[in-house]
Figure 1 (cartoon, helix red, strand yellow):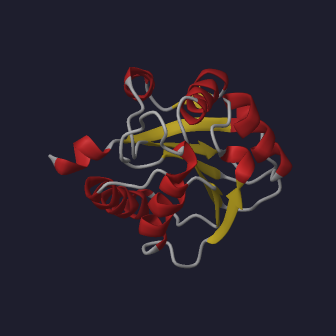
Figure 2 (tube, rainbow, N blue to C red):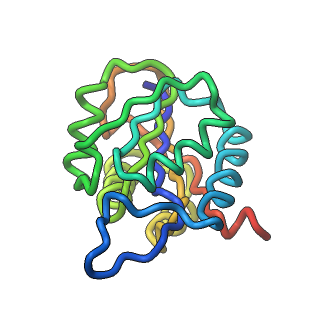
Length: 172
């Protein structure tokens, strides 16, 4: 793997008592936001070879919007990504350590955000501004893009934060 995209699902209907969290759907805005991010990711570099997607409805719907842009990406749904911690996200990537090219992981906060911060801390970073943008907030549809200097098995220490894409920045 030489490129890793960590993405939080898009805007969803609100959670309240009695609602099945796993079954929450995207809002109309969430679907539109996912399309904006898909276009930005397509311009930011190579298409993902593999997508690892939580089985929650909101992540599957986010990926459905992105997959219209990334039609050739192999998709793997993972129950383990549903509300995964940073450590669990890392474990999942380690089990896929020999995947070639770009991998996108589509999950949930706080785990996906915490793992992005772990990568930024333990790896290298292209700029302090990018790290500040990452640490500031990881809202819905946010994506953090990391690159390794060379293709190889996944290791947290090998990745450099190269971009943070927020949908609010794409709207302006």
